[in-house]
Length: 190
Image 1 (cartoon, rainbow, N blue to C red):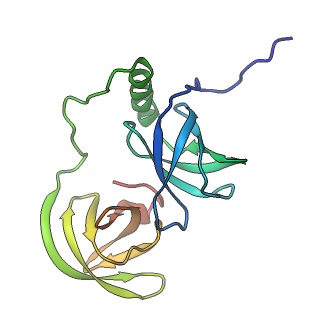
Image 2 (cartoon, rainbow, N blue to C red; image 1 turned 90 degrees about the horizontal axis):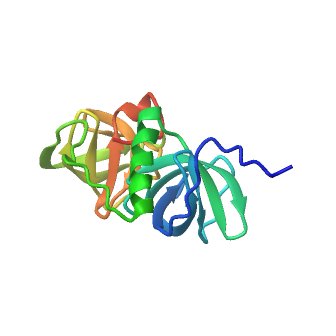
């Protein structure tokens, strides 16, 4: 009897680079996609990970994807995405376009919430340890904020900046971003 692939989503062998952060990591690392679907991806990487580690991945041209490590193998890891059905449908459109070699362009590249640009100096406090450090709020929306700081708390850490409370959801070139709603639902980023 023929071997049947029982996967829910079609795997695509796209040759794309991927930047990612793993749970507890403070630095982005890179890898190369082996295959990807709306349900997850397998990638080659030198970074070690453990089963169940939370991952935030940025595959080239596909946006931000969150999930957890479900398999580790020699020279790589496999991640199962933590996406809503609407996010999976959107990712499928992007994957279809990438597979055809056509760039997927959103007519209006808009965030869910408008951002207010600031450059407001402040002090950040890590809720778990009480550690404080200087920072600047670069922009803010209903969902989150971009923070400039020399100190980069680990992804997933709860933080308070003035009256703002949230979870560090990713690192940026100048600091990090926080998600206000993530205190109720960890590891979701605005």
